[in-house]
Image (tube, rainbow, N blue to C red; front, side, top):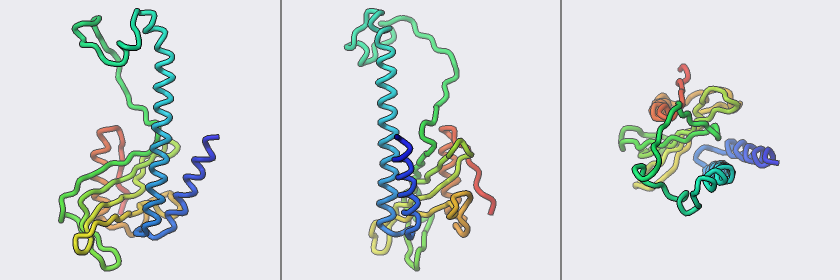
Length: 196
């Protein structure tokens, strides 16, 4: 049953979020869970493509086409006239989106336990569970720490109950989320920053 692996993944994420945000074990667990979600999504999409191909194959064969011609597109001028109507909409199969941002170095400095980190990239994760409004879950920064050493810093944006913003998140972090939300708007995500 598919719900058991999903619940196991959710339990794993819950346990990972109990660890400090800079804990290497936490980063590994979060990345593993993210990879599991992505792999499941890819398997579902591949299965859906296979099913669509099986349904469409009889109509292609009936039109005198063979598999050799269906694997690569033909130039339009050598085929029948083409028209298109409708209003295509992207269906979000997985209600999670990860938006990457390249940050200008030096425009943001993160300080954790007295150590400064200069991020150059941020991944902001948004989710829309049960078709609720989109919520920013976390931001993972790729940064340089002391002596130019590469570091990862993850900031959880949800409170412990996962039903609202975590108190005490600096305003500069929310600005990064807002920048990501602007980029995400291009794919249909609408997001409003929480009130301070």
